[in-house]
Length: 81
Image (cartoon, rainbow, N blue to C red; front, side, top):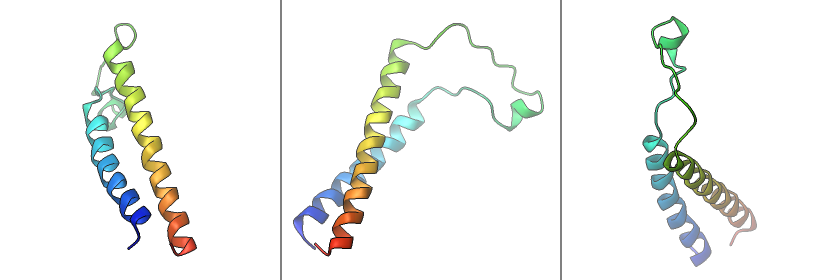
């Protein structure tokens, strides 16, 4: 296994764990099956907080890193590096 593949694989594993953690940190917004049948009467009182917006940005950033790692590994395996 070459060092670029090993490096991207390690970054991919770290990004996967971080992406899972940031997604789990988000506040629930409803819209699930209980809302479909009238069970979840959630109201939103105003906009999102600064912390929630920052968490959104961090999640998107980690998601982009995750996607680039996947594409990079695809190219490296395709080229046979």
